[in-house]
Image (cartoon, rainbow, N blue to C red; front, side, top):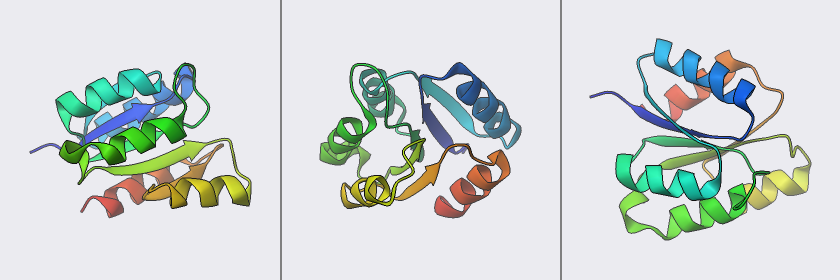
Length: 121
């Protein structure tokens, strides 16, 4: 069975490059542009992992993560923040809220893929 990844980001260039890279690795790739859309897709598709931006319209990444963690159906889903917020306090907050990882932008696509593959072996 294909591994499923949900990429949640409102920047088209980031979404496109990650989508392309993960499809080449034979992932089922789903895209959301904000937290609300992300929750809908996560509930329907049950991804193995979610790459989640923090600064997005409507519902930010922190609130999205909180709701994912409250959903019993998504208890096994890994969530990794992928954010331009790179201060230590931002990273600590993300991890404290229940993120499984935190990567900062700009990022290396190779590193993102290897970290994701490692997390969902």
